[in-house]
Image (cartoon, rainbow, N blue to C red; front, top):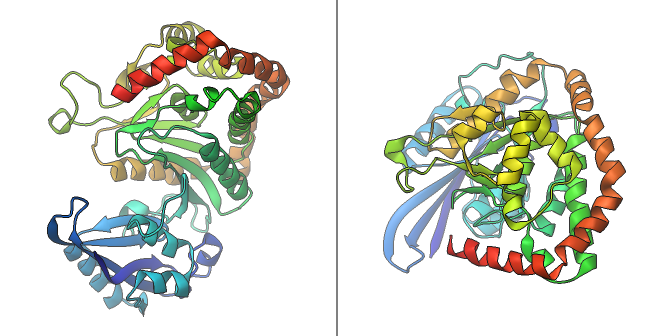
Length: 403
């Protein structure tokens, strides 16, 4: 049984809406504390403990009770914090405040289900809310948007997930407060994304396969034709379509877990990165292959695409598939580094300049995607419904289930 005592949320304004357009009218901060006491765990064992949910602007965090109360005391005791909101029950919280953060708190505690794609604007200077000064323009109103793949355990990119991702990117891309996107994942099982949903092809429904492939193509086009930079926060293994998704981003970070903290077998890398489509017979489209060539050259692209070689994060970085390695086992630390990359590096350029560079970089690939998509679609649908290929997929899924 759960008991909700109170909640902690930070905002720049005395308003229960935390969307960035409100943030430009800076007023004194509102503070809300949200605690949840757990009397039993999932096994039914009796335990005592309190979990505290906090949202720094739009970046959710979980703290110990002591650190949460200390932070609350610091904020409410300062001149910038004059407002305190108290809500005793989750249901009332959702009804009375009914905004984005209310939903996030309830989703965090499992009172309502999460979406396949969770998104949020990230408060500036998220890694040090009170003290860190931004290095970009003083009046810059651009914010990072966190996009989280939330389809555990492997974050397979099924049709519903891809549609949600497209809708969110299209919705937020035109917002001037959107400075860039950070794609990360709920990687509780250590997987950023295992790629595309092979079970879709096994349903032997050609119309469904066509719809799925068109949606995958549309996602690539939406990313390439966006005016905003994309950062891939690769916080787990990235295979096949998961590696392709990361490659479509402008910049890619990954974590290297210190040896003493590794929870996987000795000799295994912190993360694995692979274009393993060749292992199960899936063929690259020309735009995807050209993107790999663009990043690592023709010789290396041919090698990793033909051999399905599984690379460590370090090997992928050496080839140019990943850009920066962060030595940490903490996903929050990795994500904060991605926020810094956007704020302190990409935001040094104007939004117009970034949009122009992205157009120069991706226009030829997007044009190639538009040009070839009909032929690629016909070939792919026929390929995925071949009996031999279908059997290969079934065998692959059995192996993956054992993994």
